[in-house]
Amino acid sequence: MEEELINTKNTALSFILEAKGERELEEIRLQFLGKSGKLTLTIKGIAKLPIEKRPEIGVLANDVKKQIEDALGRKLEELLSQTTINCDIDQTDPGIPSPIGHLHPTTQVLNETIDIFKTIGFQVADGPEIETDYYNFEALNIPKDHPSRDTQQTLFLDTRNTNITPGEIILRTQTSAMQGRIMEKIKPPLRVIVPGKVYRYEQVDASHGFEFWQLEGFMIDKNVTLTDLFGTLTYFLKQLFGEDTKVRFTCHNFPFVEPGVEAYMSCSVCKGKGCGFCKKTGWVEVLGAGMIHPNVLKTAKIDPKEWQGFAFGTGFSRIIALTYQINDLRTLTNPDVRVLKQF
Ligand code: PHE
Image 1 (spheres, rainbow, N blue to C red):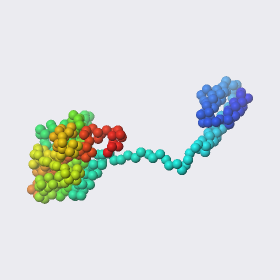
Image 2 (image 1 turned 120 degrees about the vertical axis):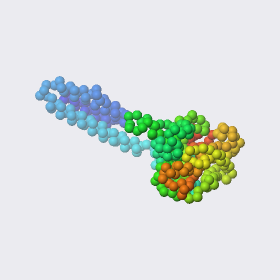
Image 3 (image 1 turned 135 degrees about the horizontal axis):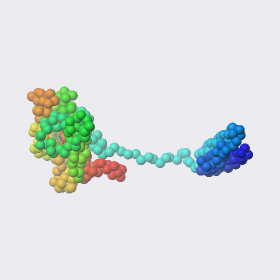
Image 4 (image 1 turned 180 degrees about the vertical axis):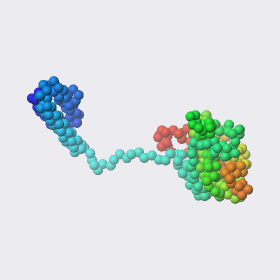
């Protein structure tokens, strides 16, 4: 056994010495120290020796194992250092440039929009996407049985196994939900925009999504009128899309504004000629707006006799699509970099 161990050690060490590469070294390791390696099997055999022989041979076997392991370690270091020295690297060669991304089209248009509104005194606010029924509806003059709830295909959160009344926690369907939250916290006069994502159980098509961006804006001050609203919105759309953009307002009902309007702008995808995006009309609906309803102000403890305000909410995903002349909103959520690289 003693001789066998010495022989194994000598063979292993000479193999290690000759090894030409990492792979060969690994093979040698397995050949001697692997599960069924030569040394491993010899060591297993120690158990069969007479008991008085075992300690002496055990010590020797451990020593042999250690010497082989050390030799393997030294050789590996040597091989690795040679690899670096021998390999053909020109250290002065400029590297391969890593691809650099850019801001997503949504963020680009958002930044531009924020800049436009900041120049006319608006602050930017942010709010929760998981919202309560209260802020999304009740505080906006939309009580539980109001028919306008039907138009906002609401997604409800599963509140089973909680003590929350079913239906009270939802994904916000409109950034208008932030009106109440902000009015409760900041005293007028105020001018705020709130960009953010909203969710509705919608049939997805080129101009509708179940998850999309809106940008809410509202202003509360003394003597604010509908012309302030028209002026602000026309200014914003012309700044973003150019002076020749046409803007048109029609009457519309939203429970939280009185009077209420909808704003349309000339379709920038087809330049008003008519295309799939504008449903061949040449106009795209981009905003809902109006004068803040006195009930909304009262709910937030603002006296409507003293203060008036306007509010608007854009389908911001549409604004982004119109900016880049994208004729399908789904492009904006496509993660394929070949698509995103174009903007
Ligand atoms: N929140 C409305 C919507 O989602 C838009 C709107 C905002 C209308 C503010 C009037 C005032 O359709």
